[in-house]
Length: 249
Ligand SMILES: [Ca+2]
Ligand SMILES: [Ca+2]
Ligand SMILES: [Ca+2]
Image (cartoon, rainbow, N blue to C red; front, side, top):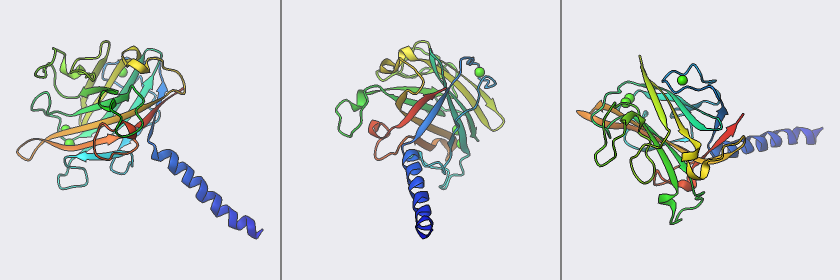
């Protein structure tokens, strides 16, 4: 019996370390859903697998700017969801933010969704700056056009790697709430280059940017900038440190 007593704590420690190793990678699940209509209302979502934006979530990494924990009392938190079907990948957010005003196209609240198209797994890979697709969702502006870019409706701004052009067939809507905003976007799989074959169990290197701007310090300021992923060392485009998006049914 004595051996059993000794082994039980060891097994618990081993089990905890395995769970810790899994969660350290950063995994976000995307739930199958074929009934979503992108209209800025989330009554068509099942709200499975929430990804909480919080200083307590070890997979949200501070990049630059001020943070929730520092001197500026920024109200910024929320929860993100993902869903998929045979044609589209979807993202939704329910965000608490005390200021959603804007200065211009660039100085506004936005989220970026990064997909690694080349499977870059180590630092120094010469392809790393070109190895991804990003989709930036700008929450605030209506009808603003970024300088030097093609005319896109700014709140549908999905920027591909080679320019600030909307990804064809993508769509986004948002609704302001009493304490922030809700957003809902969709991107066609066929526009995600190497990722154009969705199937249950598919795992994709993936990163999320939360870029939070408030009118503070006498102007529009970056108050919080966080990345979700496995970890963050020196640069936000560390494709060898991305998390994983997993498609589940
Ligand atoms: Ca909807
Ligand atoms: Ca805020
Ligand atoms: Ca804001």
